[in-house]
Image (cartoon, rainbow, N blue to C red; front, top):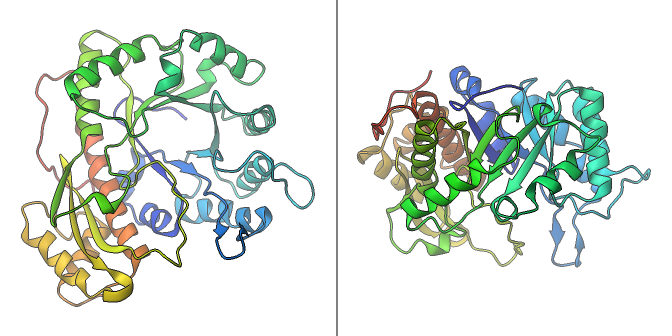
Length: 374
Protein backbone atom coordinates (compact mmCIF):
# COMPACT_ATOMS: atom_id res chain seq x y z
CA UNK A 1 0.00 0.00 0.00
CA UNK A 2 1.55 3.25 -1.12
CA UNK A 3 -0.04 6.27 -2.80
CA UNK A 4 0.39 10.03 -2.87
CA UNK A 5 -2.09 12.92 -3.05
CA UNK A 6 -3.48 12.19 -6.53
CA UNK A 7 -5.44 9.23 -5.27
CA UNK A 8 -9.03 8.55 -4.27
CA UNK A 9 -10.34 6.68 -1.20
CA UNK A 10 -14.13 6.23 -1.46
CA UNK A 11 -15.94 4.86 1.58
CA UNK A 12 -18.37 2.11 0.56
CA UNK A 13 -21.08 0.50 2.70
CA UNK A 14 -20.64 -2.70 0.66
CA UNK A 15 -24.27 -3.17 -0.23
CA UNK A 16 -25.05 -4.79 -3.59
CA UNK A 17 -25.35 -1.55 -5.55
CA UNK A 18 -21.98 -0.33 -4.32
CA UNK A 19 -19.93 -3.43 -4.94
CA UNK A 20 -21.42 -3.78 -8.42
CA UNK A 21 -20.45 -0.14 -9.12
CA UNK A 22 -16.89 -0.96 -8.10
CA UNK A 23 -16.77 -4.10 -10.25
CA UNK A 24 -17.82 -2.15 -13.35
CA UNK A 25 -15.15 0.54 -13.08
CA UNK A 26 -12.76 1.23 -15.92
CA UNK A 27 -9.21 -0.06 -15.51
CA UNK A 28 -7.84 3.49 -15.38
CA UNK A 29 -10.18 4.46 -12.54
CA UNK A 30 -9.20 1.34 -10.58
CA UNK A 31 -5.56 2.41 -10.73
CA UNK A 32 -6.19 5.59 -8.71
CA UNK A 33 -8.73 4.14 -6.24
CA UNK A 34 -8.21 2.34 -2.94
CA UNK A 35 -11.68 1.75 -1.47
CA UNK A 36 -12.47 1.93 2.22
CA UNK A 37 -14.88 -0.98 2.55
CA UNK A 38 -17.10 -1.01 5.64
CA UNK A 39 -18.41 -4.37 6.79
CA UNK A 40 -22.16 -3.78 6.76
CA UNK A 41 -24.10 -3.64 10.00
CA UNK A 42 -26.02 -6.70 11.15
CA UNK A 43 -29.60 -6.33 9.95
CA UNK A 44 -32.50 -5.98 12.36
CA UNK A 45 -35.93 -7.60 12.07
CA UNK A 46 -38.42 -5.05 13.39
CA UNK A 47 -41.18 -7.64 13.45
CA UNK A 48 -39.36 -10.08 15.75
CA UNK A 49 -37.27 -7.45 17.55
CA UNK A 50 -34.08 -9.42 16.93
CA UNK A 51 -31.18 -9.49 14.42
CA UNK A 52 -32.32 -10.74 11.02
CA UNK A 53 -29.36 -13.15 10.73
CA UNK A 54 -26.74 -14.76 12.89
CA UNK A 55 -23.33 -13.13 12.77
CA UNK A 56 -22.02 -16.23 10.97
CA UNK A 57 -24.54 -15.95 8.12
CA UNK A 58 -24.10 -12.20 7.94
CA UNK A 59 -20.32 -12.36 7.49
CA UNK A 60 -20.11 -15.53 5.39
CA UNK A 61 -20.33 -13.81 1.94
CA UNK A 62 -18.27 -10.71 2.76
CA UNK A 63 -14.76 -11.80 1.71
CA UNK A 64 -16.11 -13.66 -1.33
CA UNK A 65 -17.77 -10.46 -2.54
CA UNK A 66 -14.60 -8.44 -1.99
CA UNK A 67 -12.65 -10.90 -4.12
CA UNK A 68 -15.32 -11.06 -6.84
CA UNK A 69 -15.78 -7.31 -7.11
CA UNK A 70 -12.35 -5.87 -6.31
CA UNK A 71 -10.03 -8.79 -6.90
CA UNK A 72 -6.60 -8.79 -5.30
CA UNK A 73 -6.07 -5.01 -5.40
CA UNK A 74 -5.36 -3.26 -2.08
CA UNK A 75 -8.33 -2.08 -0.02
CA UNK A 76 -9.04 -0.85 3.49
CA UNK A 77 -11.55 -2.93 5.44
CA UNK A 78 -13.30 -1.42 8.46
CA UNK A 79 -15.46 -3.73 10.61
CA UNK A 80 -16.51 -0.90 12.94
CA UNK A 81 -20.24 -1.60 12.46
CA UNK A 82 -19.85 -5.03 14.02
CA UNK A 83 -20.95 -4.72 17.65
CA UNK A 84 -18.41 -5.50 20.35
CA UNK A 85 -20.29 -8.42 21.93
CA UNK A 86 -21.33 -10.97 19.24
CA UNK A 87 -19.07 -13.97 18.67
CA UNK A 88 -19.20 -16.59 15.95
CA UNK A 89 -20.90 -19.91 16.71
CA UNK A 90 -17.48 -21.44 17.41
CA UNK A 91 -16.52 -18.63 19.77
CA UNK A 92 -14.20 -16.75 17.39
CA UNK A 93 -14.17 -12.98 17.24
CA UNK A 94 -15.95 -11.78 14.04
CA UNK A 95 -13.03 -9.52 13.11
CA UNK A 96 -10.65 -12.50 13.17
CA UNK A 97 -13.06 -14.36 10.90
CA UNK A 98 -13.31 -11.46 8.42
CA UNK A 99 -9.56 -11.07 7.92
CA UNK A 100 -8.82 -14.80 7.93
CA UNK A 101 -11.41 -15.27 5.20
CA UNK A 102 -10.06 -12.31 3.20
CA UNK A 103 -6.55 -13.78 3.44
CA UNK A 104 -7.67 -17.22 2.28
CA UNK A 105 -9.33 -15.68 -0.78
CA UNK A 106 -6.26 -13.65 -1.75
CA UNK A 107 -7.65 -10.21 -0.93
CA UNK A 108 -5.09 -7.48 -0.14
CA UNK A 109 -7.03 -6.05 2.81
CA UNK A 110 -5.62 -3.59 5.35
CA UNK A 111 -7.43 -3.60 8.73
CA UNK A 112 -8.85 -0.26 9.87
CA UNK A 113 -8.76 0.71 13.54
CA UNK A 114 -9.74 3.83 15.46
CA UNK A 115 -8.87 5.47 18.75
CA UNK A 116 -12.07 4.09 20.28
CA UNK A 117 -11.47 0.49 19.16
CA UNK A 118 -11.84 -1.86 22.12
CA UNK A 119 -8.96 -4.10 23.18
CA UNK A 120 -10.31 -7.24 21.52
CA UNK A 121 -10.89 -5.40 18.22
CA UNK A 122 -7.36 -3.95 18.29
CA UNK A 123 -5.88 -7.38 19.01
CA UNK A 124 -7.71 -8.83 16.00
CA UNK A 125 -6.37 -6.03 13.80
CA UNK A 126 -2.90 -6.70 15.17
CA UNK A 127 -3.13 -10.39 14.31
CA UNK A 128 -4.25 -9.53 10.78
CA UNK A 129 -1.43 -7.00 10.34
CA UNK A 130 1.11 -9.55 11.57
CA UNK A 131 -0.18 -12.35 9.34
CA UNK A 132 -0.61 -10.27 6.18
CA UNK A 133 2.38 -7.93 6.57
CA UNK A 134 0.34 -5.11 5.07
CA UNK A 135 0.26 -2.89 8.14
CA UNK A 136 -2.89 -1.20 9.40
CA UNK A 137 -4.94 1.97 8.90
CA UNK A 138 -5.95 4.50 11.55
CA UNK A 139 -9.27 6.26 10.94
CA UNK A 140 -9.11 9.52 12.87
CA UNK A 141 -12.21 11.61 13.54
CA UNK A 142 -12.10 15.42 13.57
CA UNK A 143 -13.15 15.59 17.24
CA UNK A 144 -10.22 13.35 18.15
CA UNK A 145 -7.75 15.36 16.08
CA UNK A 146 -8.56 18.48 18.10
CA UNK A 147 -7.67 16.93 21.47
CA UNK A 148 -4.43 17.81 23.26
CA UNK A 149 -3.98 14.10 24.10
CA UNK A 150 -3.94 13.03 20.45
CA UNK A 151 -0.29 11.96 20.29
CA UNK A 152 -0.52 9.92 23.47
CA UNK A 153 -3.71 8.23 22.29
CA UNK A 154 -2.08 7.29 19.00
CA UNK A 155 1.02 5.95 20.75
CA UNK A 156 -1.08 3.79 23.08
CA UNK A 157 -3.13 2.37 20.22
CA UNK A 158 -0.20 1.63 17.91
CA UNK A 159 2.08 0.24 20.63
CA UNK A 160 2.96 -3.37 19.76
CA UNK A 161 0.76 -3.09 16.64
CA UNK A 162 2.50 -1.10 13.88
CA UNK A 163 4.71 1.96 13.54
CA UNK A 164 3.37 5.07 11.77
CA UNK A 165 5.37 4.26 8.61
CA UNK A 166 3.53 0.93 8.48
CA UNK A 167 0.18 2.63 9.04
CA UNK A 168 -2.15 4.61 6.78
CA UNK A 169 -4.03 7.57 8.23
CA UNK A 170 -7.54 8.58 7.15
CA UNK A 171 -8.58 11.93 8.64
CA UNK A 172 -12.35 11.51 8.57
CA UNK A 173 -14.43 14.69 8.84
CA UNK A 174 -17.69 12.77 8.55
CA UNK A 175 -20.48 15.12 7.46
CA UNK A 176 -19.65 18.46 9.12
CA UNK A 177 -21.14 21.90 8.61
CA UNK A 178 -18.85 23.22 5.88
CA UNK A 179 -20.08 26.81 6.05
CA UNK A 180 -18.40 29.22 5.96
CA UNK A 181 -16.11 27.04 3.89
CA UNK A 182 -13.15 29.45 3.88
CA UNK A 183 -13.04 29.49 7.67
CA UNK A 184 -13.61 25.76 7.99
CA UNK A 185 -10.83 25.02 5.51
CA UNK A 186 -8.38 26.97 7.67
CA UNK A 187 -9.44 25.01 10.74
CA UNK A 188 -8.97 21.68 8.91
CA UNK A 189 -5.62 22.85 7.56
CA UNK A 190 -4.47 23.67 11.10
CA UNK A 191 -5.61 20.28 12.43
CA UNK A 192 -3.77 18.43 9.68
CA UNK A 193 -0.56 20.32 10.47
CA UNK A 194 -0.72 19.24 14.12
CA UNK A 195 -1.33 15.54 13.39
CA UNK A 196 1.58 13.64 15.00
CA UNK A 197 4.03 11.92 12.64
CA UNK A 198 2.58 13.85 9.69
CA UNK A 199 5.47 12.91 7.39
CA UNK A 200 5.72 9.31 8.57
CA UNK A 201 2.30 7.84 7.87
CA UNK A 202 2.46 5.44 4.95
CA UNK A 203 -0.44 7.26 3.27
CA UNK A 204 -2.54 10.25 4.32
CA UNK A 205 -6.17 10.87 3.26
CA UNK A 206 -8.69 13.63 4.01
CA UNK A 207 -12.27 12.30 3.87
CA UNK A 208 -15.70 13.86 4.31
CA UNK A 209 -19.01 14.56 2.62
CA UNK A 210 -21.68 17.20 2.18
CA UNK A 211 -24.28 14.70 0.98
CA UNK A 212 -27.60 15.17 2.84
CA UNK A 213 -28.64 12.60 5.47
CA UNK A 214 -31.97 11.90 3.77
CA UNK A 215 -33.65 12.41 0.42
CA UNK A 216 -36.50 13.86 2.48
CA UNK A 217 -34.46 17.08 2.57
CA UNK A 218 -34.81 17.40 -1.22
CA UNK A 219 -37.96 19.50 -1.75
CA UNK A 220 -37.65 20.33 -5.44
CA UNK A 221 -36.56 18.39 -8.51
CA UNK A 222 -34.11 18.72 -10.04
CA UNK A 223 -32.01 19.81 -7.06
CA UNK A 224 -28.37 20.91 -7.08
CA UNK A 225 -26.37 20.08 -3.93
CA UNK A 226 -22.84 21.55 -3.75
CA UNK A 227 -20.05 19.03 -3.28
CA UNK A 228 -18.48 21.07 -0.50
CA UNK A 229 -16.14 18.25 0.53
CA UNK A 230 -14.37 18.51 -2.85
CA UNK A 231 -14.22 22.30 -2.70
CA UNK A 232 -12.87 22.09 0.85
CA UNK A 233 -10.25 19.55 -0.17
CA UNK A 234 -8.96 21.73 -3.01
CA UNK A 235 -8.68 24.74 -0.70
CA UNK A 236 -6.87 22.75 1.99
CA UNK A 237 -4.59 20.91 -0.43
CA UNK A 238 -3.59 24.08 -2.27
CA UNK A 239 -2.77 25.85 1.01
CA UNK A 240 -0.79 22.91 2.41
CA UNK A 241 1.22 22.65 -0.80
CA UNK A 242 2.04 26.35 -0.60
CA UNK A 243 3.28 25.83 2.97
CA UNK A 244 5.31 22.79 1.91
CA UNK A 245 3.21 20.58 4.19
CA UNK A 246 2.26 17.07 3.16
CA UNK A 247 -0.83 17.06 0.92
CA UNK A 248 -3.37 14.30 1.64
CA UNK A 249 -5.25 12.20 -0.87
CA UNK A 250 -9.00 12.74 -1.21
CA UNK A 251 -11.77 10.56 0.19
CA UNK A 252 -15.56 10.81 0.34
CA UNK A 253 -18.73 8.80 0.97
CA UNK A 254 -19.79 8.68 -2.71
CA UNK A 255 -23.55 9.33 -2.90
CA UNK A 256 -24.19 8.43 0.75
CA UNK A 257 -24.36 10.14 4.11
CA UNK A 258 -22.12 8.43 6.71
CA UNK A 259 -24.76 8.11 9.44
CA UNK A 260 -26.54 4.76 9.59
CA UNK A 261 -30.24 5.12 10.40
CA UNK A 262 -32.10 1.93 11.41
CA UNK A 263 -35.29 1.85 9.34
CA UNK A 264 -38.25 -0.50 9.27
CA UNK A 265 -38.53 -1.42 5.59
CA UNK A 266 -42.18 -2.40 6.10
CA UNK A 267 -43.02 1.26 6.67
CA UNK A 268 -40.51 2.92 4.36
CA UNK A 269 -41.65 4.37 1.04
CA UNK A 270 -38.45 5.48 -0.71
CA UNK A 271 -38.72 8.07 -3.45
CA UNK A 272 -37.43 7.43 -6.95
CA UNK A 273 -34.16 9.38 -7.05
CA UNK A 274 -31.28 9.55 -9.49
CA UNK A 275 -28.12 10.99 -7.94
CA UNK A 276 -25.78 12.28 -10.64
CA UNK A 277 -22.37 13.71 -9.74
CA UNK A 278 -20.97 16.77 -11.54
CA UNK A 279 -17.57 18.42 -10.99
CA UNK A 280 -19.09 20.80 -8.43
CA UNK A 281 -22.35 19.28 -7.22
CA UNK A 282 -24.84 16.44 -7.15
CA UNK A 283 -27.64 16.86 -9.67
CA UNK A 284 -30.56 15.03 -8.04
CA UNK A 285 -33.77 14.01 -9.80
CA UNK A 286 -36.52 13.03 -7.37
CA UNK A 287 -39.94 11.58 -8.08
CA UNK A 288 -42.74 10.03 -6.01
CA UNK A 289 -42.27 6.91 -3.88
CA UNK A 290 -41.57 3.75 -5.84
CA UNK A 291 -43.85 1.49 -3.81
CA UNK A 292 -46.97 3.23 -5.07
CA UNK A 293 -45.64 4.67 -8.33
CA UNK A 294 -43.12 2.02 -9.43
CA UNK A 295 -40.00 2.64 -11.51
CA UNK A 296 -41.20 3.95 -14.88
CA UNK A 297 -40.43 7.44 -13.57
CA UNK A 298 -36.73 6.67 -14.07
CA UNK A 299 -37.01 6.99 -17.83
CA UNK A 300 -37.93 10.63 -17.29
CA UNK A 301 -35.11 11.05 -14.75
CA UNK A 302 -32.63 9.67 -17.29
CA UNK A 303 -33.88 11.92 -20.07
CA UNK A 304 -33.59 14.93 -17.73
CA UNK A 305 -29.94 14.07 -17.01
CA UNK A 306 -29.13 13.59 -20.70
CA UNK A 307 -30.83 16.86 -21.69
CA UNK A 308 -29.04 18.84 -18.98
CA UNK A 309 -25.59 20.39 -19.25
CA UNK A 310 -24.35 17.84 -16.70
CA UNK A 311 -24.38 14.63 -18.74
CA UNK A 312 -20.93 13.16 -19.35
CA UNK A 313 -21.95 10.97 -22.27
CA UNK A 314 -22.76 7.28 -22.54
CA UNK A 315 -19.08 6.30 -22.92
CA UNK A 316 -17.99 7.97 -19.69
CA UNK A 317 -18.95 5.09 -17.39
CA UNK A 318 -21.03 1.94 -17.16
CA UNK A 319 -23.54 3.99 -15.16
CA UNK A 320 -23.81 6.59 -17.91
CA UNK A 321 -24.36 3.88 -20.50
CA UNK A 322 -27.24 2.50 -18.44
CA UNK A 323 -28.77 5.98 -18.14
CA UNK A 324 -28.67 6.40 -21.93
CA UNK A 325 -30.16 2.94 -22.54
CA UNK A 326 -32.91 3.45 -19.95
CA UNK A 327 -33.82 6.84 -21.42
CA UNK A 328 -34.45 5.38 -24.89
CA UNK A 329 -36.11 2.19 -23.62
CA UNK A 330 -33.23 -0.15 -24.51
CA UNK A 331 -32.81 -1.26 -20.89
CA UNK A 332 -35.14 -1.79 -17.94
CA UNK A 333 -36.10 0.81 -15.36
CA UNK A 334 -34.44 -1.38 -12.74
CA UNK A 335 -34.94 -1.13 -8.99
CA UNK A 336 -33.40 0.76 -6.07
CA UNK A 337 -30.23 -1.34 -6.22
CA UNK A 338 -29.89 -0.55 -9.94
CA UNK A 339 -29.93 3.19 -9.36
CA UNK A 340 -27.49 2.92 -6.49
CA UNK A 341 -24.91 1.19 -8.69
CA UNK A 342 -25.57 3.53 -11.60
CA UNK A 343 -25.09 6.68 -9.50
CA UNK A 344 -22.15 5.27 -7.55
CA UNK A 345 -20.34 4.02 -10.64
CA UNK A 346 -20.65 7.42 -12.36
CA UNK A 347 -19.51 9.14 -9.14
CA UNK A 348 -16.43 6.94 -8.78
CA UNK A 349 -15.36 7.55 -12.38
CA UNK A 350 -15.95 11.30 -12.02
CA UNK A 351 -13.94 11.68 -8.83
CA UNK A 352 -11.17 9.34 -10.03
CA UNK A 353 -10.64 11.69 -12.97
CA UNK A 354 -10.78 14.77 -10.74
CA UNK A 355 -8.20 13.60 -8.22
CA UNK A 356 -5.81 12.25 -10.83
CA UNK A 357 -5.79 15.57 -12.71
CA UNK A 358 -5.84 17.99 -9.75
CA UNK A 359 -2.53 19.75 -9.05
CA UNK A 360 -2.40 21.24 -5.54
CA UNK A 361 0.69 23.27 -6.45
CA UNK A 362 -1.22 25.14 -9.16
CA UNK A 363 -2.93 28.40 -8.20
CA UNK A 364 -5.77 27.75 -10.65
CA UNK A 365 -8.61 25.40 -9.65
CA UNK A 366 -10.26 23.74 -12.62
CA UNK A 367 -14.04 23.40 -12.62
CA UNK A 368 -14.24 21.63 -15.98
CA UNK A 369 -15.97 18.29 -16.44
CA UNK A 370 -12.89 16.63 -17.89
CA UNK A 371 -12.67 13.63 -20.13
CA UNK A 372 -13.40 10.05 -19.11
CA UNK A 373 -10.45 8.08 -17.78
CA UNK A 374 -11.02 5.06 -19.99
